[in-house]
Length: 220
Length: 220
DNA sequence: CTGTATCCTACCCGAACGGATAGGCACCGC
DNA sequence: GCGGTGCCTATCCGTTCGGGTAGGATACAG
Picture: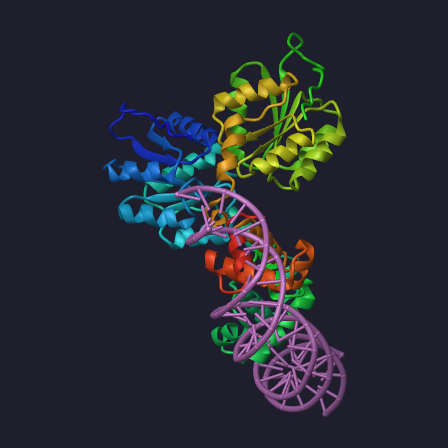
């Protein structure tokens, strides 16, 4: 749909940091361009799909930083991040997302992302973060990482014991009781007990409901 | 469904159009402010949660247009839209969203929203849309409404038949095969068959995995 | 020391699930 | 017509699940 590419070749400053912005939200691309180029030290190129970003890099374009939207066409979650990182080990790649949670942010950072930018950031914070990352640092908003931490220990999780939480995590991964028992080094009847009791605590009547409730609550 | 409301309070001479923007994405709020006020004919007020927007309206502030983010804190999907509409029948309310699909857009418009703005819009299109809506028209991007028809069913859902999708939805609700059979007016063995075949199609090995995969894919 | 809470283990049983196989029916394109 | 596809139904079998009950180990507080 959005095949047009807004390439802005600003060569006013040979020392400018080149930033590639890949996001299917036109509005956000406009904003980032305005904010970054307003700083005078950035040169931005924007595309609307992962494929376009990939093509630019394959064609040999160099960027100090690549910003990838987590839920853009072709991105496929963290798959896109890994592929972009593989394209060039030197290229710094960051994830930007409006919906992703702490879990995904941590996975992205663990996979080698230069940073994670929630769209709740203000323009000013974002410019700082981009400069920070372009200089080789790893960035993630601390309040975001923390806020999710307490949100993770929500009222639902409070009522569960440590073991029950471990078992519940197994349920969300679609494991059988036997698999959970093996992974936690327990006997299967024990797992069944934990499963049964956590059903009562969270109001589930089978493992699928329990898994969905856990997901809805933002656990795991 | 063409709700052509009369234009009240068209303030073409007494002053700028007042627009309330409620979105938890700081970046987006900054952008909208810049773009709208840059037009010289808009006065914007921005808040980050539904509760703040509600308070402003309860306190008596008047706006020609209220923009509500579909997935902001307190919004609760279309609930927030309905509550905001109830607050004042004259107030025009539009939904803005980065993730919602055609289905939700249509529901919003049917519920009386002044418009639906995907965040894939460019700044220019958005200014036009806001002006359009503030003048009493109902707006929705045609290409979005059409494009979603082919793209709404994501790659995962493409491979499933209608029945299998219905069964899969039952799985995500934690229903047993028997319950699904009753709800869809089928025999239980039939449901079991659909369950089994959709396992193969989406790569699940039990109902919990199937439910999680469906959720991850954004279905239901 | 005794009561209490949490966790681990174990057994039984009826119900549901996962997998394989197979026949019937309606529709559509060749 | 014929084959292909999607959908509905059915039976069989072994495994897993959900629920109940019960006992033992550890730790901690009164």
